[in-house]
Image 1 (cartoon, rainbow, N blue to C red):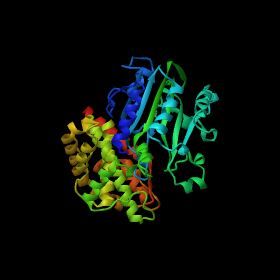
Image 2 (image 1 turned 180 degrees about the vertical axis):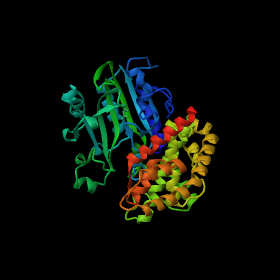
Image 3 (image 1 turned 120 degrees about the vertical axis):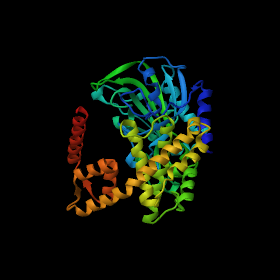
Image 4 (image 1 turned 60 degrees about the vertical axis):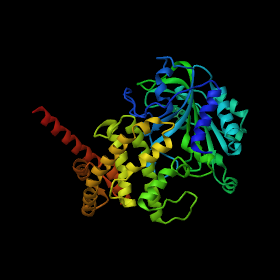
Length: 454
Ligand code: SER
């Protein structure tokens, strides 16, 4: 099944359960001081959970563009190195605002996965919250009993607060959750090691696909929990992971969400990406694969953020976007030998592929293309010089820790984000002194304050 059809099937299913289908909210949040980007489907509905407004319908479903690159949910450094984390991803979600609760949410999730999509029940595991006495939240007996109607008991896993109590951020609506995991390993692998033991163990083929959150609390600024005025449901399913399961592949990057973008990079660089099914690849090929994954992932994140109005800049959300793009440029520069702007060429592919569902990427295609091309050109100009300087710094360093002042100089003079420098240093087996970096940064801030007061 093609990714476009999987998305449609989900929305049609929840439409048939009387949900109002709404468009994705923009990826960038302009009016929530606790969050820079939409990091989950529920962010746009936060006020309804808190009881501060009334939604158009008590049942809503959509697919939400999410970005997890800052704050509590931050996957940036994993991206490219594994096959199932992303900066930007789509989250399919259905919501009940004081309407249905656990019984319907779990029954529909099971129906959609096993009857509509016909995923193999034997590959699915579910989890429920084990409870947390110190916060006075009990074991979720109700969810456990509901699951027992559909799933053998040995496939129901009890999870702790980290895995089974979902929170939006340090503050905000939250509650116990029940996740659905899928085991995509081969039959032989499944016979040898039980999937149950691999749930929540960072196995790339035993992954969470759907989270059903039962919103009952609000986490307040002082850390305490207060009961919300009503009980709600907030579900989120990782679209790219679902596509992986449906397309019988073992990497999100081998689904048709990513393959057109990868094909474009192959065409531009004349290098080859190898799918996750190809084993025993060379170290060099592995580096090429990582770089290509980084670039296709980051291109999507940056393109959608710009289409939604967030230009790269030197502060706040704009700086996050700039950093993501620079990470992609640097991977291309070092591992794909791309010395000219090229990432902007992926925008056309993206617009073609996703424009039907996300019209903003089509309507903003020219702007997005131009902004990315300009950013690439300007960062490439400094990248070469900066990398040479970094090599020199490393050569002059005795021991394995580079001075924070040098890392600051790279940041200040060449616009190298410190996490980019840290990453390059890590690859070379070095670290840097964070305290010295901060001290230099503070000194510079004091200098510019003094200058602006003159
Ligand atoms: N808010 C939950 C999550 O992001 C479910 O949508 O996982």
